[in-house]
Image (cartoon, rainbow, N blue to C red; front, top):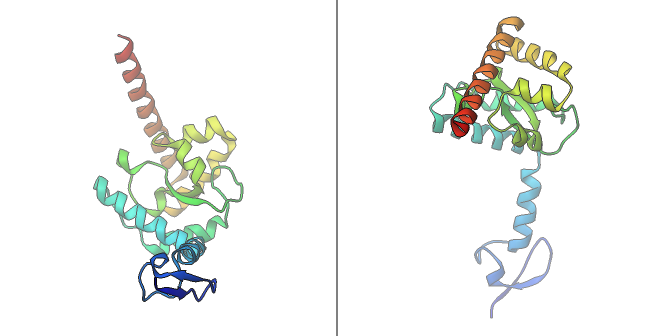
Length: 181
């Protein structure tokens, strides 16, 4: 049985514990270095950008998002969730109006939030999610931030988001009534 010495952990291991015989690191060390690389902030932003673009393509929504936009948003977030304000190592992009509901993939529709909060929100309305789960006073600064990014008036954007929330609620009530009746 052929063996090889991993240049990272310096352990002698069989060739079968390498992805191929030309690699210098064993599989375990390669996986560990990969996790370390992916944990770097710029790589999280790169993955978030790639995922957002693939989702935009899937739902055929308008997209003018660039990697620089995403990197900028992650730097602005400074490691904090936009919804909770808590520091997090697990940040992701959040579309205020989900792309599955026709929301655009633009900087003016994005927040950087903790992945757990993002999953809890799901496909629902950001306003309703924030008001029900967190401090309702958090909504105003977030809508002001989004309005500034989109070069829009605060009241106009708030009304648009509120209308989206109302439509989502009406759709939910219709589904519930259909099941009952």
